[in-house]
Amino acid sequence: QVQLVESGGGLVQAGGSLRLSCAASGSGFSINAMAWYRQAPGKQRELVAVISSAGRTNYEDSVKGRFTISRDNAKNTVYLQMNTLKPEDTAVYYCNVEVKMGSLRFVWGQGTQVTVSS
Image (cartoon, rainbow, N blue to C red; front, side):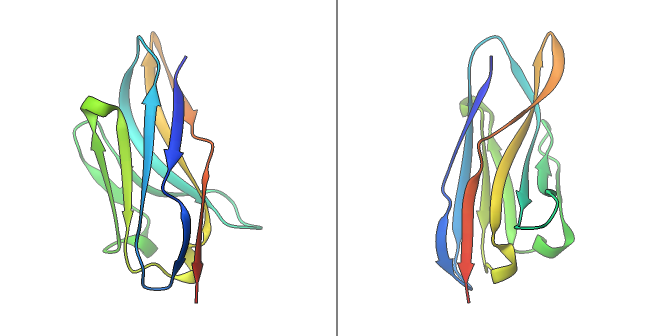
């Protein structure tokens, strides 16, 4: 069984920065793609950024140039560096990891709240 533990959320003023982390633990698995999603109140969960096992990245348009996704494969950890935060970035942020344990499956983190005040 694979578990994800997220950290790094909090309250920040507009223009500030936060760094989210998501670490995978367990045994007998390998990780393919790693991603961050977010869900604001009353809205659907949306993909923010994704990084492949080869390190290729893609971003949602509104965060391009402000957010950076990265991964440390030795630590089974994915990061999201968020700069120049805006009030509209306020949401619960979830990591999502594509795990191979015999078959492929997706695992979700518990979510971490990011609140950006104006």
